[in-house]
Length: 474
Image (cartoon, rainbow, N blue to C red):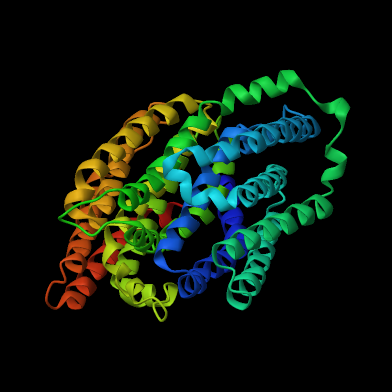
């Protein structure tokens, strides 16, 4: 078997890791600054703004950044036509978005956003422009420039956050301004140094190509929107529901939002790999050896995820104290208790993204929509029943169960398009070990850290051993 595809995947992963690891760690450390200067109820508003932006972006940009990658890596399409067409359609969508956003004030759940309408509109606009430029740079396989931009943007975000949040004490508005300015700096940087001006021309606008890209992305719009709902519905339920059996409200929702930041360490590992994997999945889609390629890559990916999650669970309390600052608001000191189930949920979400790559590579994005629809409905139903009884832990459990269901469905469905072998016995064993580690932390079992360490060693050894055959082959 040719080793070229593995070398390309490894090389791109390393480049993305160099560019992303430092920036993502810095982004996580910004949570320390946020939790020091933003109280839990306002932290909920901050997250509501972020999630609303994630909802608006795919709807009004038509998820065209996904099309840029899929079509841009396909050599049969002209890149100038791709970038010009996507740019024109994106700008048109942003104009419609500016007319729609003020209507959010009429929705009760979005009432906390009343004073942020203009900032939210600018936030989405700059985010869309940055995404448009960065994804086209990635489609041109300028991975070093793409990675450097990740570092540059995060440094700008850090500087602006210190100025607006720490020095000027502007709270949530300071957060919004920081993101807006950092995204704007990124868009200008990429547009200038990647020479994107030469890829825009009125004559290159191709509506036929635009229709092809929209046919590809339209099923992704509700998919991304529903995934956003799955991600944030927990906080809306916690913030708006009342119960005699559990502590709920905006402050509780803010604590849950803070707890959800810690599993981002797992998502960070996945995101670095996924950027490289998505490119390989597309370029290797027609390869006769793609099944064995998927099998080997998935085996390695799953092992790293489970071992990394076990390590995070072992160190969850000290990691929480680093990422979450409880010096000003003592409530933040308890968030590590709500993290374990979300860590396990993050593992399954990362594996869901791997399987999502099959849908995009094979252009079966409708299947991504159907599987996400089931996940979204399941999550909403479980939130409704579990949160009033279990509070914040109920939201975490609902997230885990819905992600697990999505994984099971996609593992069956996606392998219909790219058949590859999976050792489900190892997956089940790993999952049970991590679930045991979660329960030990949640229920504060006696000698918990000794038990956690033993389980971590078991998971680490099992996954290390499982990788040895692959190493010999490659």
